[in-house]
Image (cartoon, rainbow, N blue to C red; front, side, top):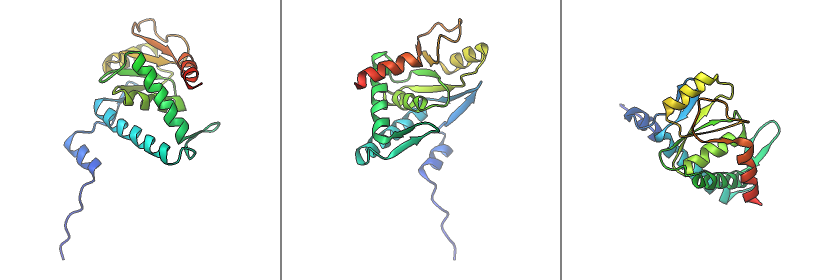
Length: 172
């Protein structure tokens, strides 16, 4: 008895058709390019639905922090309003050089909600590698920890601490 070949999953089909780019490794950066921004908007929608169903369920857990779906969704909404107020919108790429933390996920999803993409950059990139990564991915802005990491970067820069403080003010 001959069996029909298994159906390809939607993701496998998209990969085969070249419609899904994934995250490209680039000079120490992980780039969420235009195609994955649509995927992240879908993830963002799933987050919203999950937050409505069970807002107290744990969405993220780190060594020292636990975030519920409701809190994560609220933070992503505040982040999306922040990026929208900064003029960041569809097609824009923002470099996120904030390391491996909850805020990275929040801002990656927030950027996706406004139609932008995030270039996730290692916090310890050398200045030349950082400038190269920002140039190659076409970043129009950069969010990082502390002061502007590079004298050569002339675009907008948002320190994570100031952005987090502004988001906390809007939640109160």
